[in-house]
Length: 247
Ligand code: PEP
Image 1 (cartoon, rainbow, N blue to C red):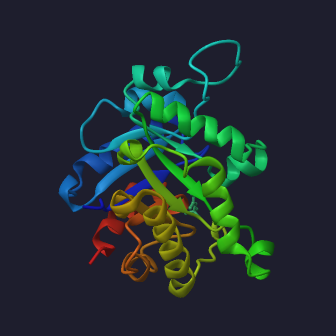
Image 2 (image 1 turned 180 degrees about the horizontal axis):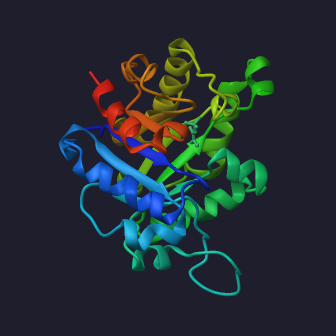
């Protein structure tokens, strides 16, 4: 059974005090975990504190593939585990774009997660130029083939995929449901042709300016299993409301 997931990506936003207030609000809402699997990708500095509760999974926005060593400013999977963070984002377009993370480097991160049985959301998605050229499906195939599709089927339970068209992230512009359906069905087909039946069990999230007014139609798409939410996750109430947009 594919899980319904709502994952908040705070990026480099919220102070520690604001983060604690967000969590208190989340905890005091009537939201029950069985509505959907809530995940929170917070600044690494806050992970230890935020992970001390059981209402949502807390994860990091980035990780280094090496176990330890001279990588100033980086964090390893073991370090994330040691403070209670249980998942990580890999391949977010902002990491690819602003920090030049290549498909090869992302493959190393995927391999590190698999070696350490660490859950991850793998992000993929095209830029506007690629979309306009009609090359988006090939582009996404290439991203997945280069970094992800080599993993052993036994490790698929660690994986969630997020399709995030770059032109829709933080722009207020959302892909329409025809565009979303097309890409999600394509990713599903890639997973099933690579991994067989097990590929059908991987959750695929949509990300890109999701909010309470568009979430219902997006989450109704047959291959959409939830969302990776940036802007609309910064307020606990608007994030929680999205859980009610699943049919
Ligand atoms: C994201 O950061 O992954 C994202 C989808 O952001 P937003 O919801 O703000 O577009």
